[in-house]
Length: 374
Ligand code: UT7
Image (cartoon, rainbow, N blue to C red; front, side, top):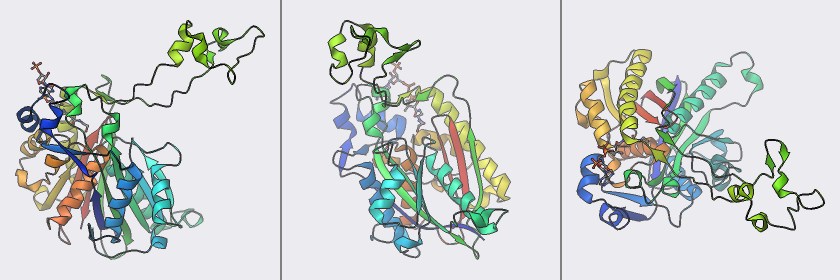
């Protein structure tokens, strides 16, 4: 018995931007980008929201559109749980999962977001599986909690909206998209055999993206900021915009536009990525008792084709065991693994009974893998 993937889908924004177009923005060229990353183009969400992309991917996974792979189409009321892995949701509240639940009319589902950067989908699947397993096992107290039988797990990102388009070392890498999987607790199938998720301290700050909800706060360390007080000792917030205190450094700092773009030290992340990927794969093999030679397909995070090639070499595996989907999508963070999984299913690479590993790494640092029987 186990948590089994019964549907999978993906969605991309309409606009596809080739490497040559990026050479109009920064000093770069197609040859450098292709050789160093394996990326030829990426999709950029201009008109699509994150919810639009997640909805299209989810509809494909649920069998509500012909674009995905789906064993059995489910009704809206069948879904008990929605988890959206993202760090670029359309809003902080409602959550991306909540917005998706509403769009799809999943009346019975609880919905929440999870941020583990590019490893988000692997984390989200692990959380969904754990909730389902606890629910099915009826562990002490489980009967008093929400029964979770079927879940929709989505990875959705609009990374190009947190990209510094003047930084050639990052802007050529990122793209937008969404991937989704529908999972069901099945008494007759093993489903997920093992998972492994890990946080490692990123003590050099190699990968980060600050938030942008720094609304002006009329306080300093001692209380109400003296610079903001008017002659009567009040802060005339509603009637006098802080701009009228433009000579005051405190007010000026409050009005700085927040910088919400991804910073990355590529080489440090590259080193972490290759080690994290091989470790996570070894750990799920150990935990499941499955031999590496019995794995039919590995679906890795698509951050850089060279990272995948390096990991294949380190593991002594042929590259064709790995799903390579990066060429026309770039790095889509939490959407990367479920989109690559949808590609693998669409290409007929995963057949019933196959042992498959999904593996990812990302900012935080986070890393992890899930080994499942299809
Ligand atoms: O999903 C989140 C996890 N992220 C990742 O996994 C990313 C991991 N890192 C990488 O994929 C690679 O480190 C990059 C693709 C980001 C960079 O590749 P690299 O082979 O590590 O290049 P580098 O940073 O060592 O830069 C080599 C040269 C530098 O020039 P100099 O100093 O040798 O003159 C860079 O300034 O390439 C230059 N460069 C570029 N040249 C043309 C950096 N970006 C570009 C560019 N076009 N876009």
